[in-house]
Figure 1 (cartoon, rainbow, N blue to C red):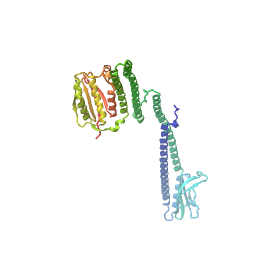
Figure 2 (cartoon, rainbow, N blue to C red):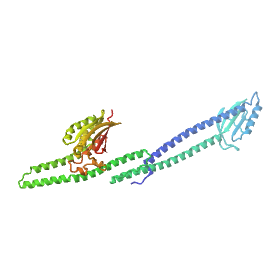
Figure 3 (cartoon, rainbow, N blue to C red):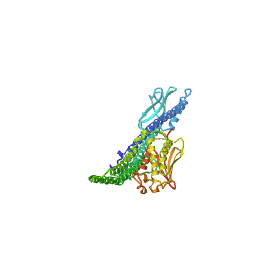
Figure 4 (tube, rainbow, N blue to C red):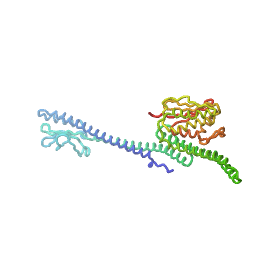
Length: 453
């Protein structure tokens, strides 16, 4: 396997993408907050400057220049020249009062920088100027505090961006490595399976997330694959074992017939016996091919809504006389109305015919065979029960394997494919087959999903 690389990891790339989008959103929102804060600070500063100008200017009344000078001087002494500037100049631009002389500023709000001894180099000021009693009054406040606040906010946003970026990348790497380990576990399991280790399964964390769900589905698929492969191995072994005897018997019959022909003896009985053996072998292979076709789902195109009770009733009518001739009885004990399912009538007829024939073949005289169709919640239950010898509990799952036969059944006719065909047809219809003990006897229940109205 290739060495894990974060940069090639899809989870890490997704984490980086979301981290980038998150950081971008943080930067954009920070820029908006910064602009709103700057505008609010500027508005507040302008309001403070205008209020201070109004207070100083209100000292002038009825040519009270001295009151105005006194107000300017008193305000000048309160604050430092680095923070607040008050300037009162005469019509000729001469200095009258204040802690600084400013001339040439327009009326209203304006900005200016100063670089004078005793003052901050290139300090920025926000000023409001106007004419009071023919004299020019300017009130200016330093922008240093506002710019300091803006700098602090910018630094905070910058550090916040760095911290968020670091956390996002680190968290993305940790999450990506955790997810990648789980993906590596899936890849390692699939490699093991591809090398023939069919019992390999993807480890589950158990938290129910999407990876656990997908892993569980893959494990289910691997379980079915393992079962199919084991089934094929079992079938191959059974074909080699169970068909070897009739093929050998057929060869012996033909050898005897060949020898009789050499001596001019009658061989018609031998040929008839050989024909019976050949037919039995062909029927076995036909059943295997039919099961394979059903498992491939090729017959689903013929599905229609039908009444399962009618199918079971038809089977009962066909096999009632056969059972009576064989010293057994066959009857329908329950047919609940409305037992509609979605399926193939021909295959369902084959399913119940196999179940009934299986009971007739393996049960002694006097056996009572019962058929019923009932409904339970969203399912239609079809049951075939008898009071015969039944099937041992440890053998009940094995009887659905192809060509598997109980030891007590090997002396009776059959290929061991009847219940395998039943299981294949049931799986095609989304049904389940369950074997229960009737004490004595056996009950086989097939549960079909009801047809959607």
